[in-house]
Image (cartoon, rainbow, N blue to C red):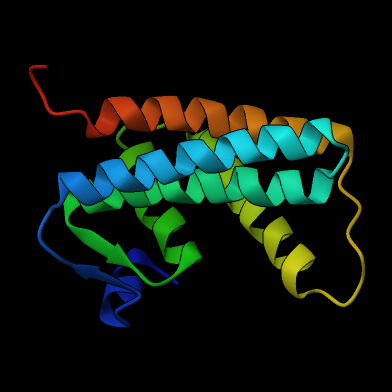
Length: 146
């Protein structure tokens, strides 16, 4: 699905830019990151990955709110970030690659028929990627000139 198709199918739609929602989404993402770290320390790698992905998703949603976009699709959120931010060099393309990989892993964990084993390295990578993305998002949504 292309970005244009995401808008045509209303999986993304234009709304008024909202910095307050952007900040609230980023704050919620930060809380999910802390939960991911706690779950990882307790050996719950699958749940840690889910929370790290949720952190990245929330941070991405913060960018969309800043831009005046409402999402109804995890895929389309990633597509928007890829085309509007990664291609312009404002987000590292590897971040979008990881976001998509963790999105697919989340889907397998949540909806798959077989148990998914998440290794320590993979959970740690998800947390590290979420930390990096949340820092970058904070800079991207900050009002200019502050």
